[in-house]
Image (cartoon, rainbow, N blue to C red; front, top):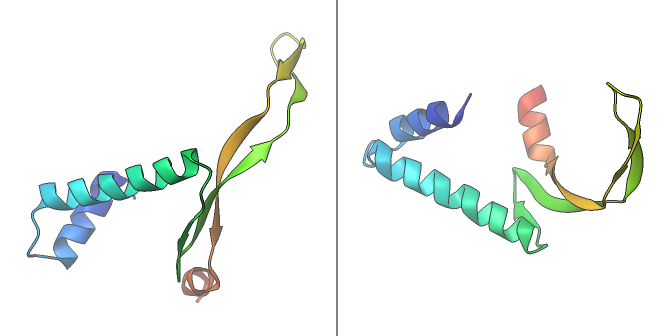
Length: 92
Protein backbone atom coordinates (compact mmCIF):
# COMPACT_ATOMS: atom_id res chain seq x y z
CA UNK A 1 0.00 0.00 0.00
CA UNK A 2 1.37 3.40 -0.91
CA UNK A 3 0.30 6.86 0.26
CA UNK A 4 -2.34 7.22 -2.47
CA UNK A 5 -3.86 3.85 -1.56
CA UNK A 6 -3.95 4.89 2.10
CA UNK A 7 -5.72 8.14 1.21
CA UNK A 8 -8.30 6.22 -0.83
CA UNK A 9 -8.97 3.73 1.98
CA UNK A 10 -9.38 6.46 4.60
CA UNK A 11 -11.62 8.49 2.27
CA UNK A 12 -13.87 5.43 1.83
CA UNK A 13 -14.01 4.88 5.61
CA UNK A 14 -14.91 8.54 6.25
CA UNK A 15 -17.27 9.50 3.42
CA UNK A 16 -17.90 12.96 4.92
CA UNK A 17 -14.32 13.96 4.04
CA UNK A 18 -13.07 14.71 0.54
CA UNK A 19 -9.93 12.97 -0.69
CA UNK A 20 -7.99 16.25 -0.70
CA UNK A 21 -8.92 16.81 2.96
CA UNK A 22 -7.87 13.27 3.86
CA UNK A 23 -4.59 13.79 1.97
CA UNK A 24 -3.96 17.01 3.91
CA UNK A 25 -4.63 15.32 7.25
CA UNK A 26 -2.37 12.37 6.45
CA UNK A 27 0.42 14.71 5.27
CA UNK A 28 0.04 16.84 8.41
CA UNK A 29 0.28 13.68 10.54
CA UNK A 30 3.43 12.53 8.78
CA UNK A 31 4.95 16.01 9.05
CA UNK A 32 4.18 16.11 12.79
CA UNK A 33 5.83 12.71 13.34
CA UNK A 34 8.87 13.78 11.31
CA UNK A 35 9.15 17.06 13.21
CA UNK A 36 8.95 15.32 16.57
CA UNK A 37 11.66 12.84 15.60
CA UNK A 38 13.85 15.68 14.33
CA UNK A 39 13.51 17.35 17.75
CA UNK A 40 14.48 14.09 19.49
CA UNK A 41 11.01 13.28 20.80
CA UNK A 42 9.24 9.91 20.69
CA UNK A 43 5.82 9.59 19.10
CA UNK A 44 3.76 6.92 20.85
CA UNK A 45 0.44 5.89 19.32
CA UNK A 46 -1.22 3.63 21.87
CA UNK A 47 -2.37 0.40 20.27
CA UNK A 48 -0.19 1.00 17.18
CA UNK A 49 3.44 1.59 18.11
CA UNK A 50 6.23 4.02 18.85
CA UNK A 51 8.36 6.07 16.47
CA UNK A 52 11.72 7.30 17.73
CA UNK A 53 15.10 8.48 16.47
CA UNK A 54 17.97 6.20 17.49
CA UNK A 55 21.63 7.20 17.55
CA UNK A 56 24.04 5.38 15.25
CA UNK A 57 27.69 5.64 16.25
CA UNK A 58 30.37 6.68 13.79
CA UNK A 59 31.96 3.64 12.19
CA UNK A 60 34.15 2.46 9.38
CA UNK A 61 32.60 0.85 6.31
CA UNK A 62 33.91 -0.45 3.02
CA UNK A 63 32.98 0.76 -0.45
CA UNK A 64 31.76 -2.44 -2.16
CA UNK A 65 32.89 -1.41 -5.64
CA UNK A 66 36.44 -0.29 -4.76
CA UNK A 67 37.06 -2.00 -1.43
CA UNK A 68 38.21 1.36 -0.05
CA UNK A 69 37.59 2.06 3.66
CA UNK A 70 35.18 4.92 4.33
CA UNK A 71 34.40 6.72 7.58
CA UNK A 72 30.66 6.95 8.22
CA UNK A 73 29.81 9.80 10.60
CA UNK A 74 27.50 9.43 13.60
CA UNK A 75 23.86 9.97 12.73
CA UNK A 76 20.32 9.29 13.84
CA UNK A 77 17.99 6.81 12.21
CA UNK A 78 14.23 6.63 12.51
CA UNK A 79 12.90 3.47 14.13
CA UNK A 80 9.45 2.02 14.72
CA UNK A 81 8.48 -0.44 17.43
CA UNK A 82 5.10 -2.09 16.92
CA UNK A 83 2.76 -2.40 19.89
CA UNK A 84 1.56 -5.77 21.13
CA UNK A 85 -1.91 -4.98 19.79
CA UNK A 86 -0.54 -4.34 16.27
CA UNK A 87 1.59 -7.49 16.40
CA UNK A 88 -1.42 -9.53 17.50
CA UNK A 89 -3.59 -8.04 14.73
CA UNK A 90 -0.99 -8.87 12.07
CA UNK A 91 -0.46 -12.40 13.38
CA UNK A 92 -3.93 -13.17 14.19
